[in-house]
Length: 134
Image: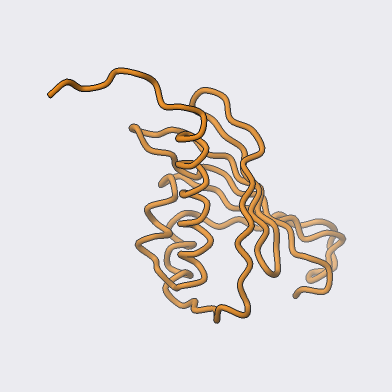
């Protein structure tokens, strides 16, 4: 049996990137912490800007979650199908880096992915709540 040495096609690469984003958002909705963990780089940083001191009254605030805290939070989630939205768009990909947008029901995630030990992993997430969402 011969092994193919050709590089993956753009469609295969985009499909793999898309699947990682789906593992992330569907893992969250399903409360599947293993699926979530599989999509994340161990040093993930997930951040949100809370503008104008909405909650704390002291100007903008940057909140951050680690991979561990996100995986632990996922264990406590379960969102009914009617409350889900999982629109994934690969915005750009070059070599071993990619940018993805995930439109969830109550928020939008902008993700940076990196090829890590042969697998795509989410390294950074900047997320924004939709207007009217707490």
